[in-house]
Image 1 (cartoon, rainbow, N blue to C red):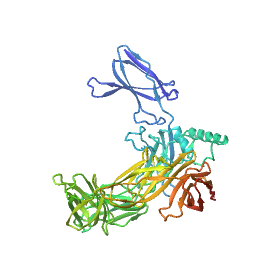
Image 2 (cartoon, rainbow, N blue to C red):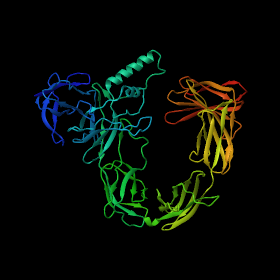
Image 3 (cartoon, rainbow, N blue to C red):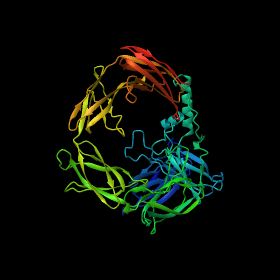
Image 4 (cartoon, helix red, strand yellow):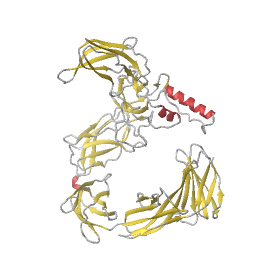
Length: 619
């Protein structure tokens, strides 16, 4: 007979007694596994399963509450041969878990018994962006409050040393990879609420504070640490995480169109009239608007558990989401609002657009193009519909079905042609036909040089273009190229890097008006030469943003920027190099965290290869 036994330990190799260990056996039919034995680990963490037949086994340990609750659990597969003993099946639990405790209370501070509290892992996108991978390996943990509204959730995956370090230094970014949780609380008769909670360990917080204190004493840190209040207590417990629930509110009524007809089978939801500036703010109570529901046979709907707030209605009735015509509705705690008629645009109030996209020089159909309705001006309609786009392959014609009545703006893009926009009138129940003519594209190219050397990694922009306009970058030779331009005159902004190093960052700017012709490439080379320097000392509040710009006094407003510098706070001084001779306004700004901007300026004359010092001091 075979025997399997070994030890159950923590990740620190500390034995864990009294933990259930379950043995599963693979059946001969391969249809599944059957539990055949269960035991408890002894005082040394040891467990044993004697007298086993040869075969495939699975040792499984249900994670205790004080262990980190990981999605893959704790298990080990093993195949036993005849008369074999396996003594190497050590199972290691992570017990560096974080606990969250607090109360669920009503607005008067009274505890709510029997409230359901769930800590659900939060998938935080890293600064590098979403890579599409599954970043969460922790599990949701839940509990129920006691008679006093108290709850305690154990088994949360702790944040890394580096992430705790960031918190101690005042960063507010939530930890990654399942070490941040959304704490949901709900109870009968109350609207649900939630809170983002980073799983911080007390000993890592204490260690990092001591580390930074020592670094400051030795002069390695420029200033004191911010006074960051964290609810971390000994034993890695986040204490006092209280969640307030408001009395349940209800909104009920029916969905009708602008002609008074019921709209059954549509999707409807509530949305905040003013969305919160930031979601998942750590340790801050949040509420979420109720999600989509389906209207009944007479357009009836009912939202329960509505949090306090101002709401609008959004509707999806088969032609894309649309905001209802209703004004924002204020909902207070415990309020029941019935008989609400939510009104959306009737399909009879929409029209269609159809036509062709052709070349304005040859009249031939353009085979490859993209076309969309980018805007609809429809008086009385909060969120007009842009319609559904289709295109016929056989003749290239297009059709927009169900566009709100009004003035629609279409935008077309095609290879070799300039981007084109056209406005068309849409009437209820009618189809508007048009032929959209595209002009051949113009192009802009050239080389950007600074003091005879290529301006590398600079960029070319169009400051007067609504929405930002085209963009081009300079390569290793200083070359840039921008295509798909409409014919016309443009103000071009050429931005060149002066430096980005331990001094901070600085850029020079050259502005020029350029005429672009249809079907032609316009070449504009930029030679920026300068040897002057504007520098000086800069002092101000340490929690503000500092910036210095130089403006050309001879240029009109909006075209006078010549250079700027930033990220020089640690040096207490700024420097702008390679400035051409001329008369300049040196503008310094000091912007506080709440957006209050203070400005100081001085006008200076700069000779060729001259250095001028201008100091600034903000209270």
